[in-house]
Image (cartoon, rainbow, N blue to C red):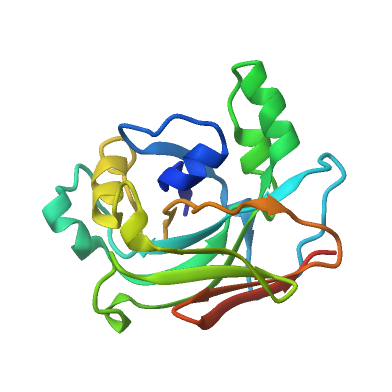
Length: 203
């Protein structure tokens, strides 16, 4: 399986990063070694002093697809969940300054904590889902999928032009504004519609 992630998919997040609003999805990838499951703790690595949380809705692909039309994209996933795109922001800044790829800052081990997945039919409209992230019981990110620049089905269609989607692949759909630094001892709780999907600690 692979993890496909979308950058700058919320206007206010692009603005807070001083980045242009994209005209097409910004795509990057993480290996399966980036996954952190079962609410296991995240152990802060020593190569970064500024790792940021970025909460995101995540969809799980259920069948193989290539060159998927947007109108058929809904057939390729039936589960939705939530995850954190942990980003070594100091490393990322350095890489950007050198016009180098992001991988070291985005794709390191355990940089993609994910929670449980549920049937997408639990929600009336996937383009109107509330989700949030709390750090130490304080809400730091809160948004709704209707604010995505590129909605889920559009992302799937676009990504499938370049990569064959396979069963079990995960697509992180972008983070809203409010990203910030994690610290050892922090407790992170991610929710969809006020239901806890992910709950883990930084050690």
